[in-house]
Image (cartoon, rainbow, N blue to C red; front, side, top):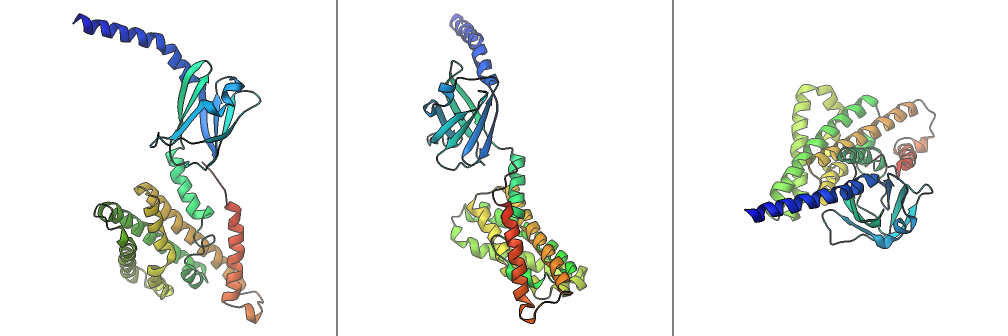
Length: 313
């Protein structure tokens, strides 16, 4: 009993003595964030020693799940005011992961450890914006062009097709995620993923076809054969393959599917707006139809290149 009390007193005394050091280490780093996939900026509560912060040997950095794999720095640059340092890495970082940074000898402290991570909501929003604008499946990956050119002649048809396509995309992507994670992976059936994904898309399209035929026959007739072509649309097959390769969870899958569908809707609406104006234009006979449509789509693709490298979070 006396030994237990002695241990308790010793541990309490040690914690009391070390508390100021821990508090000092905790308050030393006030902010840390990713600047790009090769840069991290760390802000301190006050000026720090330049010799310590710019010596890359004083840093130990790794992704939280893999502490044995150390990430190499190319340089560390301290700001003129001495209150922030920018770390430059040799290889691109996976900014979706949490990174652990340990600095040795900073402000007289043996080890100062902190983490750098993106806001998860920001990460989800980044997936949405990426699929919607930065990596638009039509204007940057050139997928789904058959349905795109076929249903982008009028705004009403384009909007209807875009909404239906987005619904099919979201439902089929969530179903694909469920089957992939709870059936294909546990039973080691990954080689069947393309067949399963196509089957799930076909099931979803058939359900939408039946419902739309009853609810809105006019919109159904305006789609013609293109609603059936959704089954073979590259975009709607690409999304399940992307989520499988990136091991997305259900929230990330939803945002990717919503962004891909929204991006397709945006592309259809933009193209249909121009198509309606072109009907009133004096276009040379050799350029009428698909030739001028491809030219306009190419101009949209060039415009969407302006979103390349955009980072909101």
